[in-house]
Length: 456
Image (cartoon, rainbow, N blue to C red; front, side, top):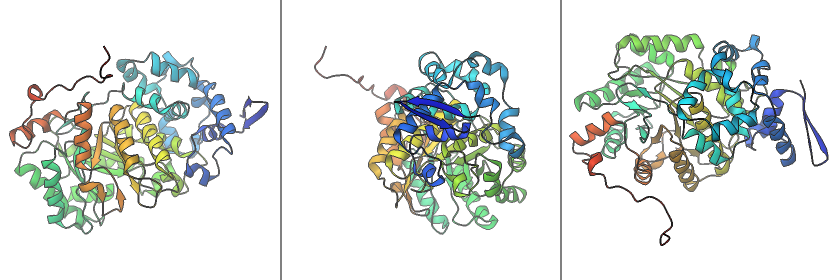
């Protein structure tokens, strides 16, 4: 059905719900590339006002991709819990924003999750300021566990990313040591293999597991190979902790990644059967990114932020340990500059946490984007205030194997120090036992509360 809004004497019309959602999205290069972005700031404001008045029920009744055409749509609608939706069923998108900011407590948000669809999360994000995205995400509590417990309040974990351009074991080991000595690795020690093959993966997995086992490190390891590669490695007896996969928000996008929902179920069941977790059994690790469906021409004319949120419906089906938005990695065709990357990172984190995911971020950009490390510092700090579950740590912030810039082990130390955040408790205790970091909570000096110097 069409949607309309009058603004400053002009009448704006939006033929479909997906058109309204696209026009209401804060500008980004990917939607412009797809030909679905608002043609002017006035049209964008009109769309946002029309979206704010949209009943939430409409987002259930009018799927942006037809039910019969897409298994992600079927997953979203078939898993929706009407009883959880009941308390907010009378609200508009604008009313949901007000409710999230003013009334929703952490416990209320937990109860609400099964009643929220990704389209609801995406829609409300489109009419929120950056500080709104931060404030609501900071109230969302999501905890997962394998050998460490991830996501407890007041804690920030780090994925130690020891990639090497040719998968050289000594190079990988050196980066692992560097990260451990700087307190990184409590989320996962996760390597992107230069070659996605059983041979490369079965070389790296025993290396990581030997280091972990020799020093009794309470963490989990992962080689970020395709799920089919990991399944073959498990069948060969390789020490697999987590099953990794990049995922998308449409059936066609996932097919472009070489996966189906059934294949993800198979990977999860195989990892669970190994029983390698000690404090929990969340065994999946997913990565996403705005623009991935558009880059594969599998977006069905839906804006990239909404498609990204739909990927989180796929993720939450499998109770993952970690979900990671690789926010700027795909390139300036989709997120052109620092401003767009920052906004997208906050949107992704907000939507993921609202839907109940252990949301982390690889705060990054490729070298040909109009962005720099100042932009990454801004996003890093904003996500820290928003309660991001984990960030990525790369030696020197320079991801040489994949040719992009990210955040370093030192950036995590900065965020922990300035915001008073701690590591995962199991990993923190290990650092103390190993005399790598000897500060215990009782010996960490209290930071003064922020305020205006000289004013009583």
